[in-house]
Image (cartoon, rainbow, N blue to C red; front, side, top):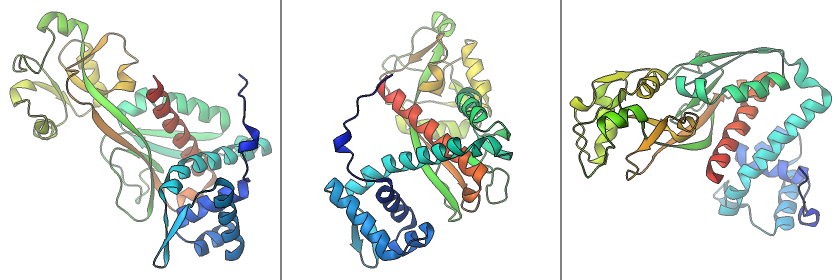
Length: 307
């Protein structure tokens, strides 16, 4: 498909964008200059040239540190995408991606591992066929600092300073039920009350009730007679007509027999953080996998937003 480009509007060069990205991620001109192997005045001129070309201010000085302006924040994700694309172009052009080998362990929830990641793994196999990928489908948090995994996809931001974390998407989740359940029990409504309906929990009932309590719907343990620590198992229970379950809309859309219910309730917003160890981020194979996953997951968010 041919895309019509507005070439005159692209008035900056990649070196300027790279200087901006390094400064934003390293936190200062001096640290960014060291990372790129440049002098600080040279880096400063490149950032200033980008600001001039775009006619915006990207940083403001707060004490001795630099802080992104709102324009800088908005530009940052686009420049990150450029950097990831540039990295893949370099790898592809040199054939390096074909020679990157070794094991990379990715941990993610069982639902994401089963229903979201396979297309990304297919892309990864085509790009770097010698890589060995081990997917650890686990709903507990594996410790990257102890090397239980190289890359983690989590729904909470890690607090450890030695970890790099990037918010790559925000999923929306709703209540779903199989048509067979609805034929048997009827369509649930908040106004009609939920005491006669069965819900399927993820793991501990008390934790599930605590999660749902802010909705003010009066859920009790009587609503949750079935549950599993496995999100995949809970989803399959719901598909079998055993009850109502919470699921992200992207996964639910893959199963035509599942109907969204209780649409009057606001969706649950579930952040998705891509995380790796700061040292591992300099590894060619882990950097390749991290960047591909970041690109894949963020594009999935854009695709969902356009639907």
